[in-house]
Length: 358
Image (cartoon, rainbow, N blue to C red; front, side, top):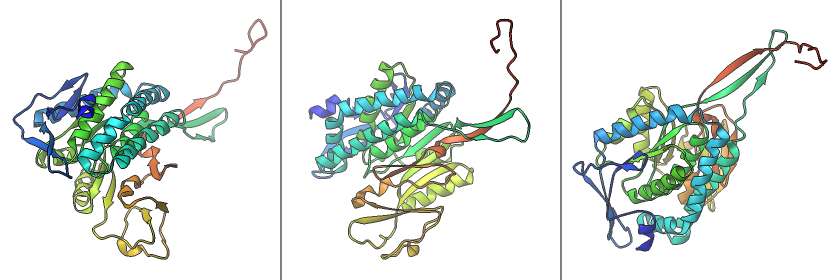
């Protein structure tokens, strides 16, 4: 299939990206095979990443973060713009791969890539609107303001039903905030990760930007568990089943890490028409959801989407402004580590010899 070649997807693919065009050469850590769910045909295979590969990925993400955080936010937005334009260029090919590997119809595959493009455009604009508060001070001739600081390495674990869009919703917002992102995709759709990584790599390298997006794929659960428990991963964004998400939540909480978890309920809540009810809560109980009304604090959103797009609703657990874009909810502040309050003592302008003020 020609679109696989266009996206740089081969019969056998490496399982980790280290940045600067370098991929893993490990071939003895297992093999992940990707199958067309409609025919059962093997589309391609990925060599699993080793523990050494994982360490290198995380180490690179940390090193890149130290320089990336110092780049002005509008410039970081330019990096996201280049990736977004590259996705526009490869929308047809990538949409075909999503349909082939995940099993969506072609229109839905293209639509998911469009979701990536939409959030990229949104992030570009948002890169110039990362505002901080100014505050009144008790001291005379003195002002105070706050400045948001990046968080660090952000980990994204995506589900098979949205193999590329979930990553973009996290990674593009994370990037403009000054973070680097490490992606662990679903083992059912690993080729989509390879393709997106290739597209973004080319765009970032052409623009002279560092490798802010990295990824790894592994057989078994050992590296995934290590990823979730890793103190170097400051935020874990997980999308998937309630059963796995509960385990992820516990592991991140044990190290007092930050997390944003989007779970598919164990039992479907009552539906009315095609409305999907999403509650943005610290804790959501199915028994709280009623067919006639939704009573929720601090926030409830009702979005009219198809059932598969439950992944579009992200839960927020942080003081932040909420930005809505096409059914997506993105908490910008969630991708920042902390705020720093600065104090400035103002001095009166002094006249100089020519009469101007200094």
